[in-house]
Picture 1 (cartoon, helix red, strand yellow):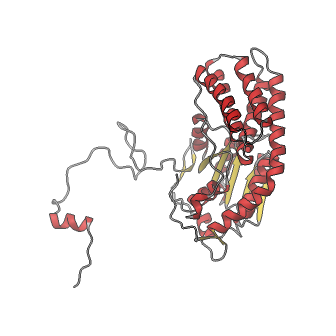
Picture 2 (spheres, chains in turn red, purple; picture 1 turned 45 degrees about the vertical axis):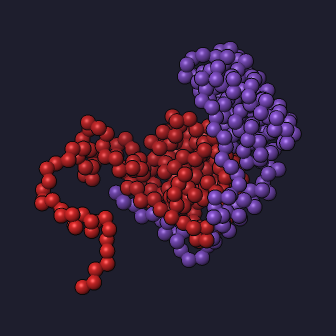
Picture 3 (cartoon, each protein chain N blue to C red; picture 1 turned 180 degrees about the horizontal axis):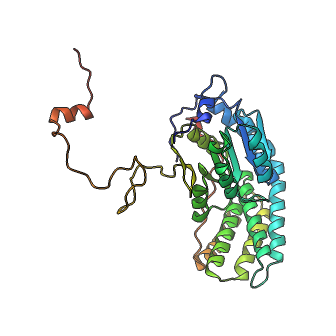
Length: 201
Length: 164
């Protein structure tokens, strides 16, 4: 379950959003276009092949991209890899949702590692799609560019580097805690950290 | 590096619609699609049957890919038109094909029983819950026999969560 900082009465505005939908299945595409029309999207860009989609991203700035994993000319995973490495801004940074019918662990991991923001299992209903879009709208993950991977940071939790390994990023904290560099806090200072109170001066 | 969240900025612009309106609008439009989705489901079942008819022992790659893709298409549609049981069978079939491929084994009967089950479930009246369960119970024995992960039930189509 994705927790969202939204209420049912909150408003969303997708009227100006440019949505790229890539699905070779006729009914699958109909489901997506009708769903997004219901959400208030006026102009979805619909493509049945990765080739068509790659042409469109050269011309239009996409707000969100939805891709099926099975496409006739290349896999959805390869499409996302190509998009992420295309250097076509801002599309190479655009949020991408990969969709698949059968979703074994290996496919979900490949979806994550190709640079997609999210993998969704079909059949997709409107509520689930809306939740994922709202989750993407609050996305704060860094964008990683390395020789092996281009896409949103794959770490959802700040657990630090794996045990026994040194971190590779400037923000990685060491696994061992060093010696204190300042005096210990007093109990009242600790209390203030946990129970902030209003102070009248 | 930090990247500007353009989607978030756009969604927060004044105007638009409430979450409830957005959800109801989408669901209303999807309801109207049902007849087309049913036709698509039947086409996917036909693709599955055609692929299965070409299977041999050992199976040829092309026919197996057709069966797998047919199952994938069924998964994408069956749950949207009230055929959750067919969705479950198609998931089980994909898992079975994955297991056979990984372990280099093959059992023609185990595959064919899934095709028969899909056809039977499509023909059963929507209200025949006992009939559906009977078919699924039989398949669960097949999945257990080959150590296949039990397919998860498809997500509910009802939007109770968003209303609160």
